[in-house]
Image: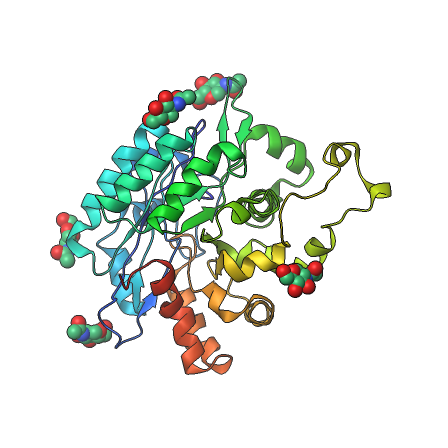
Length: 355
Ligand SMILES: *[C@@H]1O[C@H](CO)[C@@H](O)[C@H](O)[C@H]1NC(C)=O
Ligand SMILES: *[C@@H]1O[C@H](CO)[C@@H](O)[C@H](O)[C@H]1NC(C)=O
Ligand SMILES: *[C@@H]1O[C@H](CO)[C@@H](O)[C@H](O)[C@H]1NC(C)=O
Ligand SMILES: *[C@@H]1O[C@H](CO)[C@@H](O)[C@H](O)[C@H]1NC(C)=O
Ligand SMILES: *[C@@H]1O[C@H](CO)[C@@H](O)[C@H](O)[C@H]1NC(C)=O
């Protein structure tokens, strides 16, 4: 999560809700709604809270499930709220247990994504299986790459073959994985953002870094190996779906323009199709923190409404702001049927809430 991370490990858990049995009311389902435990608040990093809260209020909101979060969900008709802490591999299991216990008395309104330490793909697969089969979790949320090594700067990307054992478990369980940004390691942010430190975080760094990872997953052929794999990307696609024309154009790199590094892979990208095509089969996006109506319209034209789901990004973005957008602006843009898809129907399918 943009503000929740740890030095060696990045994990994430999330509280959610459904009101799957009740199609009356506004029935919103929201993803990417963050939650953490007190011991991890120290990791609330460089993401500013929504304008109407202080840091103390942000922290209180991150810890809370049943009080102001649920009050705001009630006031704004949200059925599925989220939360994501980040911690070390050892903590992931206990965080998952705490989250399961915290929401256990209101599973009509909250569901959960697993926190996973991604250092060991086999261990991650086993913990995912435990959370889904024993705790009733609806999938996992991964905070971009994992860092490892003595220098904390060996980065692990899940587009490499050693993670196939993890992706195999994801498709066997038939759950989605939410790809979420993380706070960058100092080495990267110092190199890239020293001249404009304000671009660290949601304004630039998060989307750029996470889209790199997601494009790695596409181009390294993960979806060719796991055709039924479902990945969810927040913030209206971390800019990938705004730029598909240019990304697809690069599939065949002109030999004359190859860099030295690109020449090491003379066959070009190992993926079978192009990036656009995986948005028809494997990738979904949410509107979290990105309530840009013209962009939403463009994305509906580009990837189709069926690939897009509503989300907010609470408590970094306020629930009323998200609810106002969907209740007051979007009815002028979408038919009632399409609005219902965006608000809940696609989410119910993708998260398997109808099972
Ligand atoms: C369905 O939701 C509406 C609006 O939130 C509520 O008033 C109603 O009591 C709910 N019905 C059931 C059967 O839970
Ligand atoms: C669930 O438990 C929490 C904390 O004990 C409490 O605040 C909340 O009201 C409970 N919710 C329900 C639906 O019982
Ligand atoms: C990865 O996790 C599995 C399952 O817990 C374990 O058997 C294996 O030894 C671990 N691998 C490494 C390199 O730690
Ligand atoms: C790596 O992270 C650990 C744990 O936070 C820290 O103790 C150590 O000093 C870091 N090492 C480097 C080289 O930054
Ligand atoms: C991407 O692939 C699809 C079919 O897989 C094809 O229809 C489309 O033209 C391709 N787009 C580009 C820009 O190459």
